[in-house]
Image: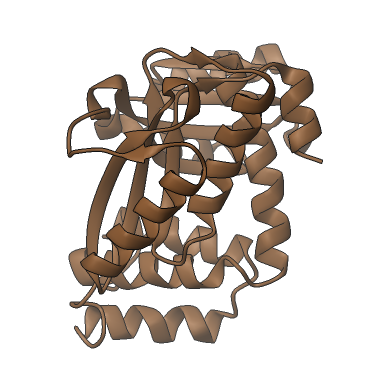
Length: 251
């Protein structure tokens, strides 16, 4: 879990760089479209949309663009063709991989994802082949240097919030919730003025597979190559890679 968490931190740093370059806009636009289509255009009544708007603002997407995309989604113009699909497979070393995609062309997405798996020493599997290895959880990540309290005080706050569990390192606290409790916990922190770098419902591995050396690099290449596909929204994997190799990969 620690290795997975550290890689998640590196990915968040990369995501911020990607956002500055505008690479995140396509994925965020799709999330805004589908969230508005499924739950309406009012973020006060549509929690998924509110999270998508937060991501868009973090990526410095202009507000006019955000509102235009939401109107398209709520007005059922251009959003109905997008469908959400989960792909599953294995990477090098037997690492389990789940890929969350939004696409208007199921055949194209499957072909692109299968190619990336094959190119990086993995293989795309059948639905359900690895999903049982993951649990859906709410995840809130707080940078300790961005809040006006110490780690112990924040941990007490996390317990008070009704969170299920938490994990700390030198710079961040990760707070985990049951999916149905996520919105309530997130609002609890907001009401206390706590800023967080990440707030999302994610898939956490129940156990990890240790990989090192060449296999580790292949796994990281697989995950990064999948994330670069336009149709891919999120990639989840259960690898455990030594810190020094992750730090090297993270640049």
